[in-house]
Amino acid sequence: KDQKSGIAVFEAAMNQQAQLRLQLATDLRLALEAPHTQLELHYQPQVRLEDGQVVGAEALVRWRHPHLGLVPPGQFIPVAESTGLIVPLGIWVLNEACRQAADWAAHGHSGLRVAVNVSALQFARPDFVDTVSATLHATGLPADQLEVELTESAVMQDVHGAVERMERLRALGVSVAVDDFGTGYSSLSYLQRLPLNVLKIDRAFVQGLEVNTTSRSVVQAILGLAQHLNLNCVAEGVETPEEREALRAIGCRYAQGFHFARPLPAPALLELLSRTGHL
Ligand code: C2E
Ligand code: CA
Ligand code: CA
Ligand code: CA
Image: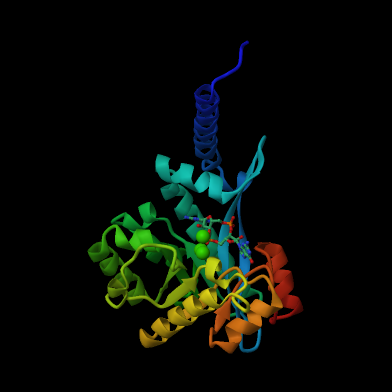
């Protein structure tokens, strides 16, 4: 009988994977020639837990592929990284996010900060800080309204270079956050050397922390560390009122997640802000 071996099935699947990635790379290159036709940013509000006030939003990229529909960033960011397309993509995201944030102020919602995800490859470029500076200048966004989110691995690849670039960002007035904090492998001893402003507590530790004492202990430890180092904390992935209340009770000051709002297209965010500044 003509039954495929496990290996053949595996190879076929791998092949399909590789082909999809290849196609995504080709199509993403095309999309970046006219970014506004296929790419857009959605914005997830970040709130102050004390009173629910919206203090900013995280920009999250979306790709509307002409045939495949909405491709999640978890699928195309890795492709962008392996092909180097993350550099032009990142420049577009940065510019678009700063432009939007300047527009919120123009609509009367001043002082809102926009957080932009920056991949390791983009951050490692020698001209990264100059690009940020030029973008702020071109869009008119005040530097203290931009926050750059870096992963632990982006920082740990080259700690010395990272510290230098982070210091230059800080000198501009830009805020620096470490994303997904707690999931990486960074040695805590490095943390005090890093000129950081914010730790973003990964949602893995936020989920169910009102009942899961291990998660709660981890979050409390991160909060203690942050306080000691004079950093702000943002809890990610808050999905329930119970998680929100538990975070507030243990002294976490900022949060984001589906409980407050999903990532929203720019017009929907503006509408939300016009309706209420609080969530
Ligand atoms: P991230 O930076 O950790 O972003 C948070 C992700 O969690 C987003 O997924 C967001 O939609 C999702 N999320 C927010 N609140 C909740 C919640 O309450 N529950 C759950 N289950 N999920 C929640 P998204 O938009 O699919 O982005 C996935 C990842 O792709 C991001 O993770 C980030 O690493 C990357 N990414 C997104 N946009 C960009 C970008 O412009 N540049 C770069 N370099 N990476 C990006
Ligand atoms: Ca992020
Ligand atoms: Ca995150
Ligand atoms: Ca993540």
